[in-house]
Amino acid sequence: MKLRLGLPKGSLQEATFALFKRAGFNLTVNGRSYYPTIDDPELEAVLMRAQEIPRYVSEGVLDAGLSGLDWILENEADVVEVAELVYSKHSLRPVRLVLAVARDSEIKEVADLEGKRIATELVRVTRKFLAERGVRATVEFSYGATEVKVPDLVDAIADLTETGSSLRDNNLREIATILESTPRLHANRRSWADPWKREKLQNLAVLLLGALRADRKVGLKMNVPGDRLQHVLEILPAMKHPTVSQLVDSDWVAVEVILDEKKVRDLVPALKRVGAQDIIEYPLNKVIP
Image 1 (cartoon, rainbow, N blue to C red):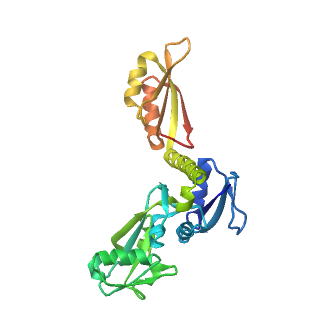
Image 2 (tube, rainbow, N blue to C red):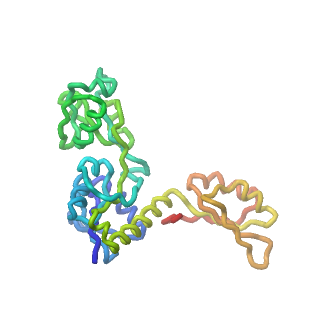
Image 3 (cartoon, rainbow, N blue to C red):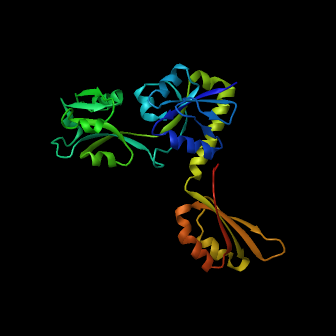
């Protein structure tokens, strides 16, 4: 038996392949192929546009897929959410669907869009947002390069942004956030009802979430004289508590802790000053609580 999994092609592809690798799955794709190989005989991966994945999952063409919440909502897909995976093309944070206008536009807030024209790829989501606020506007589908359409072709756009830099580069100003979106591992309801497929998806979610938790964290090991242990523990951050082990035939102890990588450069000199020795920093692939 195999689980057929849709993975996003395009802007999220590289970040998704890297996440799967940290989770223990090696994906490779040759040339323009849409069928990556994966070193798990129970998985069959298909590359496609993130916009389409939720629809194919909902219809049962795929057992499961990985696509943003924005596209699940836009497709009005009836799917089971297995896990939220907080990552994007460049960072570990959500992307935002925002309404934006020209920097010098007289439009200041959502109500000012009454009777205006808006371009977006997420037509249903944008129309729903406006309708909930009693704003009547023309919302049209954009085939790309949405930022360049303001102000000559449309009055505003609804576009996805991670950092806001593309909007600023195109002399645009945000007036509202429609939603925040993160990738979701989601499943077809019939596939989710299958015990084997459900367990396979749950196992996959555990590993992917573990890889995300490990990102930007490291492990730190050190040896500490017994009479200096309390001084070391007072300055060590930890996810829970440091692991302390007695060294054989010695009054020294070994201390191990998991922490944010950015804290290490300040912490290591401080640990050295209070008596820690043989300090080792090592990377993590997965953190499973």
